[in-house]
Structure formats: structure tokens, C-alpha cells
Length: 233
Image 1: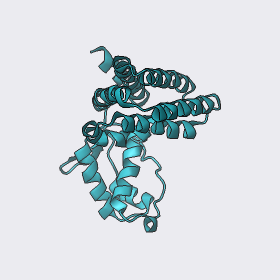
Image 2: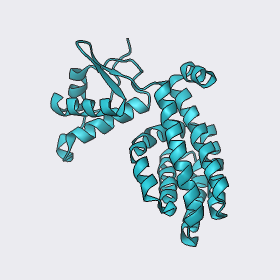
Image 3: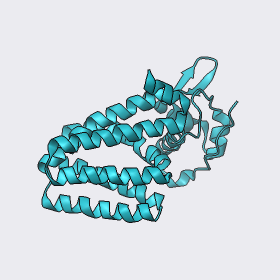
């Protein structure tokens, strides 16, 4: 049986909505691989470790059930349900939406926005060479946010809102690897060049390739051979 991961205590006095913060802590732990698929949560131990009562914990768990990350079984407990299939579906959904957002960004991006993309990519290059993972995570988020803003497509942005909760955990896991950092920089540069040239087809394709490839790498880093078998089915 897998041991309960160490998540650290929450200072309840710093958060207006404790349930939401507990949910975020658990979500990141699941998506970063601190829990194994099928692992049973020890709710009492979790509440004690986080320094909260069981009430916000149970509320957070119910919310994560809705997201598909946890599953409650009668008289058995709550189990982690996020597995290779879920990771693949998450990646494909994100690729479908973000590739269309990139396409619209290529259509609408202004000179100022294109200049911002170039600045972010230059900073990414410095952070990649310096192996500065925290900076890369922040710059990665900033880059994708800038593309979303440039797309001028509010409907697609609303569709993507739920996907955003998965981004930070997956980026933190991926960008800790030197090869991934270099590959991500090249892919982001390709996306920037396509948008800067207002090449809608190339922007869409470059973003799709980036999201699908990084999603596959993320799933394999979490689930190993199980994710690889899923890829060949």
C-alpha cells in the first residue's frame, strides 16, 4: 500500500475560502503524481496534516469528485481515480481548444502583442539556459495567457477555463527535465513565429503538436508503462 504523501500544513487564517485552498492543494498533489491512481485517501490523516477540520476537506473532496480526480465508494472510502485515460483526454481537449486559440491569435495579434511574445520567448531562452524551473513555469503561463488574450475569442476562453486548473501541476512536473525545457522552448518559438507571421494554419498546427507531445510526456512521467500501452492501443 502506498504511503500518504506529505502535503504540509495550511495556515487557515490566511484564506477566506479554506475549502477552495484545500481543493487546490489536493488537486496539485494528484496531478503531480504525489498520489497513485487507486490510492485510498486517509481523510483523518490528511485533515490533521493540513491543519484543518474534516469539513473543508470533505467539501474539497466532493468538488474533486466532480472534476473526476477522486471517486467515493460506499463503505470503502475515497480513492484517486485520475489515470492514463484521464491524462490523455485532458491533453486532447486542451490541444483542441488551444490550437484554435492560437489560430485566432495569428489572425488578430497586434504589433505590440507580437513584441510581447518575442520578449517572453527571449526570457524563456535565458531561463532555459539557466535551468530556472520556477521562472520557466511563470513564463510558460505568461506566454499562453498572452496568446489567449491576443485571440480575442471569449467563447473559446470560457471553454478552456476548466482546463487551466491542470496546467500548473503538469508544467511543474515537465519543466524539471532539461530535455523537456529545451524542446518546449523550440516549440514555443515555433508557435511565436507562426503567430507573428499571421500564419493561421501553422499557428494552429504548432500549438497542437506542442500540447499533444507535452501531454504524452506528462502522462508517461506519471503512469510510465501504463500510459505507453495506452498510446499503442
